[in-house]
Length: 168
Image (cartoon, rainbow, N blue to C red; front, side):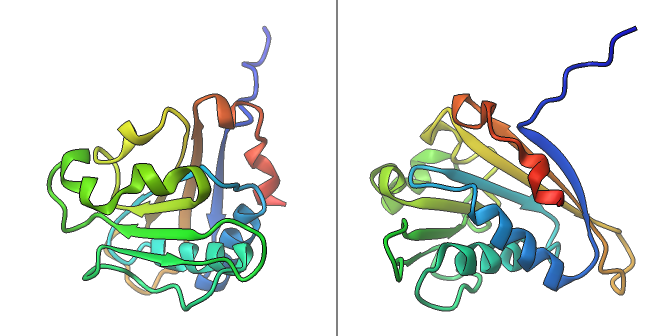
């Protein structure tokens, strides 16, 4: 019996600390380019913003990456020749893409890397190509730093990207 083909556009990782989550963001940033949409899902306190902080460091953008919960979206321009990072927190937005139109994400997407926390079911219509990152933590144990991270590339852009390099 033959093993199923390996899907390079999906990988699962175990992260043991906030610093490892930031490092994962720094490594992931090396795979990202202008036009990429990354959806982050996970419980409150799972590490979405910590991962995004690492992405910002890896992309070399200006400004401290913090949760944009109350401003909804924050743009971090590149300090070099890379793309800007647009960090969106869709937690307070109930509707779909219609409610997010005021953010002009469709205008920003071609030249930016857009990270959307709580974006599942809200921004998928922006593009057929996206990276979905799901972060799970041990429920009920607030002292446990261990996170299970699943990264799934969707669409042609991610078909040939080997996400398993992130576990190295």
